[in-house]
Amino acid sequence: MTDVAVFHGVAYRQGSVNDPIWPRIALVEGDNTILVHPDRLDEWFTSRWTFMWREEPFEARGLLDGAMEGVYLGGDVEFAAKHLRSEFAKYRGRFPLDEIADLTRHRDSLLPRFRREQRLMAAAAKYRSGTFARHQGRIHPAAETVGEDGRLFLTGPANLGPLNVALDEVEEWYATVWTFRWWGEPFEVMDVTQGRLKGIYMGGQAHFAWDYLRLEPGTRQDYTILLPEESVAELTEHREDLLARWRDKQ
Image (tube, rainbow, N blue to C red; front, side, top):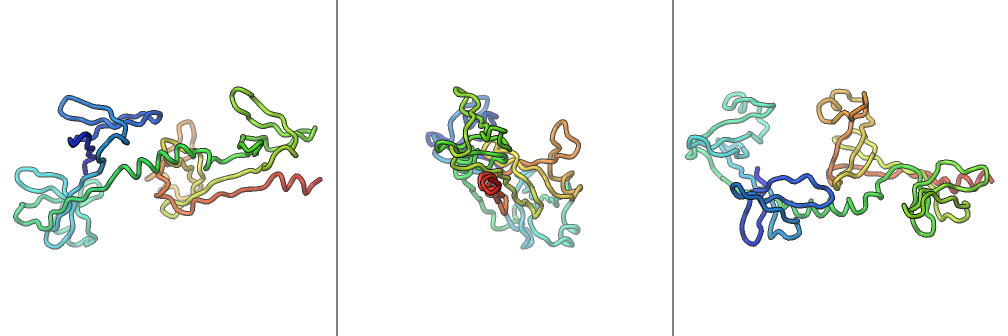
């Protein structure tokens, strides 16, 4: 599988640039590298090849000594054990070119995914968990309780600092938590990072956490994962109306 970017009609192998503030694609040609914003590309896609051998599906991994290397995509364990070698939990093989069939190139565009992630970065506040209040049409982080004077502290814009407002001045005051499932396991949204949801694992399957998640630095049991929005299920907001609860007590 190879990431390819086409710029001014020329195809380049894609390198990597870790810069979430200014997204750029590294176009590599020999010893030369060009940095280009994705929106300036003619095309940007992942290229992969598949083929059939003895009527079973494989994904190509390149040519070596005149034979095609491939990773098995099928589910026949007996076939795999008989004809292939096991490496890193996958079955692989090397096949003479005259024995393979249906060699097919697949191109999966990367631009739609990039644009989805950019939109999510722009709307990162949408999935924040915490306590918030809407004041004069703007959402601000808010205190969880009202002060003795019946006023509420908000985190205002940097140029204004904290705000101390009366509750009848806010349109909304609420606590919210976002949750989702991945592979059937429960997570709570911690943040939106580089256009992806960062979730903390809320389940109890230790082996799942050890195998697929990342232990947060400085913690003993906070396992997290970074996922594209489209790969999660049941993304749900759980909101408690604090303003209505406060008014009911008055």
